[in-house]
Structures are given as C-alpha cells and as structure tokens.
Length: 554
Image (cartoon, rainbow, N blue to C red; front, side, top):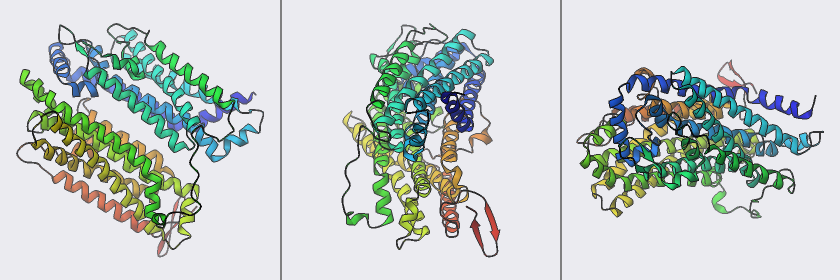
C-alpha cells in the first residue's frame, strides 16, 4: 500500500465527523432553503416585489446576492448562495490548516517526514482530501436543490460554484499555513480572506447597476475581485455560465504552485513571516495571568474589532441611502422591519439595528475564540506552567472570562463609534449616535450567553470545547438569521440567542429578553467557576462522583 493512500485514509478517518457535520449541515441548509422559499415566496409577483425592494436597498444586497429575475430557482440562488459559498470557504481553510501548520506545530509532520512519505506526500494527500471533500459538498448541494424541485442543470451549476469556491480557499488556506508560524495565525489569515471575499462581493452587489425591469442587477467590477463573486457570476438558473469558475481554478493553481515552490526551500515548521525575537525578561505588565492572556489574545481581539468597525461603517453610511430609498418606495421600510423581527422606528434606525445584529455575531465569535484559547493553553501545557506560580485555577479561569467580556465590549464599542462618526459624516441625524450605541448594547446579552455557556462546557466537557463552540455559534446564526425565512418552527428559532436580541428602535424598547439572557449568562459563568474549583487541569475524559467533590478522570 502506497504512503499516499495511507495518508488519505488517515485524513479521512480523522475528519470523518467534522466533514460529515460540515457537509450535512450545508446540504440541509440548501434543501430547507429551497422548500421554505417555495412556500414563503411561491407567488411570482411577490418575488418580483421583494427583488425590487432588495435592489433599492444596498444593505440587503450586501447580505444576499445578485438578483437575476423572479423565477423561483433564481430567487433561491439569490437568497442563499453567498452563505453556502462562505461556509464552503471556512470548511476548506480550516481543513487546510488542520493538516498542515497544526501538524507541524504538534511535531507529527516531522515524524511523518522521517518515513518514506517524505515532505511533499502529506501536502499532496491534503490537497486530494480537500478536493474530494469539496466535490462531495458540491454534489450534496446539487442533490439538495434538485430534491427541492429546482432546475436540475442549474442545481449542478450551483453545486459546481460552491465546490469551486471551496477548492479555491483550500489553496488559500494551505498558502496561509506557509506564511504564518502558528495554526491560530494561519486560521485567522485564511478566515479573514474568506470574510474579505464575502465583503468585496457584497460591495460589488451594493454598487451594481439595476436592470430596466427592476428585478435584475449587474454587479460592479469589485465583484470580480472575489472568489465568492466568481461563483455568483455563474448566474445559476438564469445564464448557467460556468466560465467564471475558471478564475477559481486559476487562483487555486497559483496558490498550489507557490505552495510547492515555498515548501522546497523551507525547513519543516518554519514560516515565511517569522516571529519577532522575544525579550530576555518579560515586561512588568505581564506579571499576572490576566495581562498575559490579554497579550496572547490581543491580535484576535483587534481583528474582530476591525470587523465590527467595518460593519459599523456600513451601518452609518448606508442609513442615508436607505432613507432615500424608502422615500421613493415606502415598502422598503416593511422589508427592514421584517428583517429586524418587527421592530418599529424610522428607516435609518431599522438599518442600524439590522447591521448591528452582524456586529453582535462578531462579538459572539470573539468571545468563543477566547474560551477556545483557554482550552488550547490547557492542552498545550502552558496553563500548567502558569499555575505553578501563586495563581490558582479559579483565578486563571475567571481572568479569561473577564477577558472575554472585555473583548465583547470592545467589538461592540468599535462598531458603535464608527457607525456614529460615519452617520454624521454623510449628513445623518445626530440622533443616530444614540441609536448606534443602543443597538450595540442590545447585542451584549446574546454575546455574553455564548461566553458563559461555552465556559461551562469547557469545565464539563473540555475535549468538546472547540467543536461545540463553533457548532453553537453556527446553529445560533442559522436559526436567528435564516430561521424565519426558511420556515423553521418558532420553538427552534427561540433556541438562538440572536432571536431574543432587543430591538432598540421606536418609541419603546422591550429589554426583558435581554435581561433574561444576562441572567442565563451570569448563572452559567457562576456554575462554571464553582465546578472549576474542583476540576483537574487538562482532564479530557469522564466525571466520576466521589464523596465530597468532583474528580476528573484524566
């Protein structure tokens, strides 16, 4: 048996659950989208009205896609493709880093290099593994849309576009792993590339040229700078043009050529962007666990703050455009109110509230990464070194909770400040300053719920912290943002904290759901701290009851 086949089997076995969850989840989203849109927007005239409203409002185009007519299948593609491509990009970049830079960090890559597999075979195995995963994903998406009674050939084009986007970002992820010296850094750069592609595509749609019939849109040139935009340019169910996918193939090929050229001239574990040499003695402000955790997590927090600021910039600058669009077509207000769970208030208030729901997601992700960092410190053994100093485990754990809370506040504050300044810069009402900060505060409880609940999972099920953390965020976003659109039952939508976020617009605001979420977050954090007092550091297995205390069987 060749070493390549052995490595392929190893990767398939290692990723069997992760890829199953990714592919099944994306396929489920596709099939539910097709059936739910058919039920909710079954009337052609109704779909035309929605498309006209979307074209009149750039913020909707930023989040959705390029309208290509009122046919049901084209409407489904407009509603959901960009999100499917976004998920395919994340799946592929995480896979790439997991089997490259993370392997080098753990030392397993060096052990494999000492076998007949040498240095290049593991990379080839990762490429084949990632390519096959995306082919399967594309096939599942195509089957899901076909099962939803959409045009079969258009469904195949959609699946090919999703798969091509994933393969493109597979190359980006592998290249990022060569530049960054840690898997965290590589994942951050690759994920930022996926997010940037989504934003660039959104700008292309927001700045696009509407057709004469009001239900078609030609994206601006910026859409051609994004791999997600290339998939969208296929115009599935309308023009069914596969030619733009050649750009995805070309970018993937360029990344792979660069990858192998770099690999031939670097040592195992080395990176092109080497870290700076550290100080001989640590600064005084690193003498405590909180300041050390802050220093370690600072790049991640800064990155999410930049994302919050960028979203706030869109909220502030587009609010004036939304107000003008509503003056031309009053039904724009209804669309924004539906997106904001029925909130009242003016158009610019509604738009700010809708955009800050995205800032809330960024804050929740930032807090999730804080808890994940704590788990990584524990498994790497560095947390144990900290606890050899006069620091008990409860203080170490509590400092990370405090850091996660500060990270949430900073992301929301960044969005609120930039939204306020941009709204004033475009001549908006000064009252929008207060609206921006109120919208930011409204997102605080949901993000704190994620922090508290994941912290509790960390002490109870430490081995599942990372997988459950990202799963909970993904489910919350899906139920909170797409549940109503896709006809998900109300009881299921209520499981998402984002469904209960207060809507601070109009004459009065109901903060009761926010208050309950704060209670849940505080209760989860308190229980987590109490259990952490008795939990053994680094344990990953089962709990066993013994008289007087909990003991973790390592």
